[in-house]
Length: 305
Image (tube, rainbow, N blue to C red; front, side, top):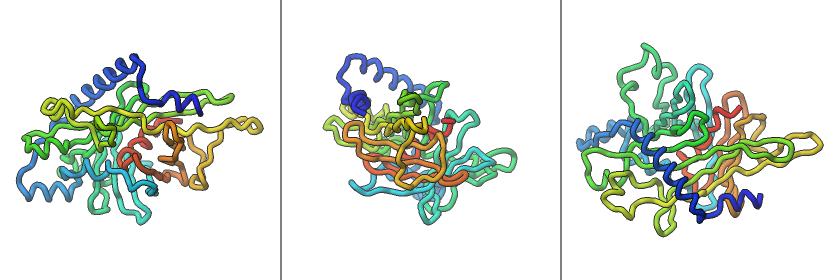
């Protein structure tokens, strides 16, 4: 575990400059595929957007972490008929819904303000799709940066800075970077990930990195990135010759998608994701992760088998 902590320590090696350039290039490619969202000025348009889960304030709310020491416990359910994944609270209210591409390299994420599903089970695909739902724009996009699905970027469809400045077009900001890799543990191998979040020049956590337009207007607005979370490594059980990890009684089914995240230095728990039934998972998370970052981290594991 000490080696993992050292690997995730603050970046000081010159090679990290090359890594930063690679992430910037990846973000540019991801953003180039997204439509620029026109800003809405009419109040009726604003309220209609709120009903559809497209309100300009949405990039702020799901990205904000809970209070320090407070754990959020949510549930993730999948559909056997459609590539749709839903995040719900304990009462069953829908919080977020993700629509996956057929190759699993991108998730369009929609937010619900009413607790009702934003996407219908059969209205997303084929001829039965309604005009209203076919025109929905995602509040967030999670996209893979390579064919092996090892690098991921989480972006928001709106930028708070653009909204404040009254720009006619709203650009996108990056909320998280996720890196996957395999690590040998004992006689086995484990899927691992690192989650990096944006921080200001003073080191304070940010909900998202300023978009390109805001960075051009204020060069100091560019965020520094810190690896805030890394996979909690399982232990090799010599007797049973398998990898084991304590899920505190929260997980009841074995799955390659089960994982936990912790701080890179303090090893404090941040996220627990695990299977409890067919098509149902628990998602527990704490600060500095927000709801959307926790959900995105879970989504990136759906190709793990």
